Image 1 (cartoon, helix red, strand yellow):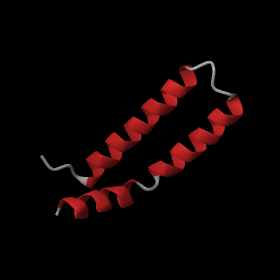
Image 2 (cartoon, helix red, strand yellow):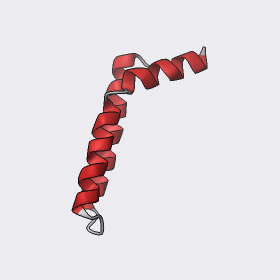
Image 3 (tube, one colour):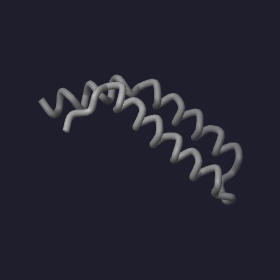
Image 4 (spheres, rainbow, N blue to C red):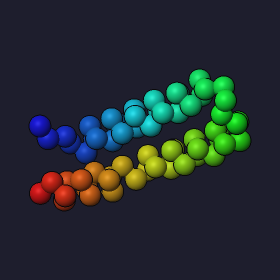
Length: 60
């Protein structure tokens, strides 16, 4: 089953959002570290086309 770039981007963003939500529910995480990690994860979402292209070239 092939996944289009749009589907990949949506699922990738959904996965990152799930990680952020799980971290937000964890009380032991320091708020400063939480903020830093959320910034990193949000910036990773901008690289979804690059990751998709890398995975596609690896598969072909």
